[in-house]
Image (cartoon, rainbow, N blue to C red; front, side):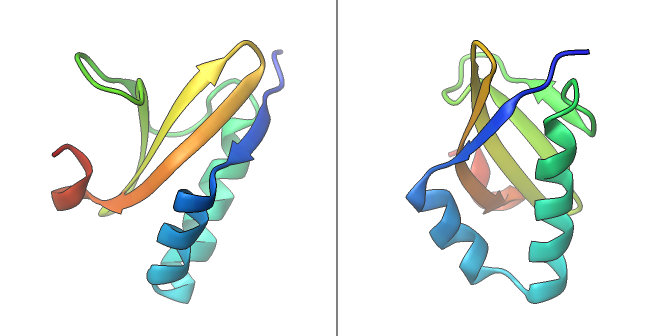
Length: 83
């Protein structure tokens, strides 16, 4: 089983601070699950950068995979995430 190292960019931390406590805690739990073989609702995006998204309710975590690192760039509401 491949274990990833999670790196959260400052912009994503700022995004997390904007959402409610309950949703933030759940999103962070899902981010931790990504460490273990991309567990959760993960999808590879086409024609998009970052390349992947993880979904939790209305929230989207946008990230890339670089070797054994997951780099999280944004945590956005679904209506904002694919612009």
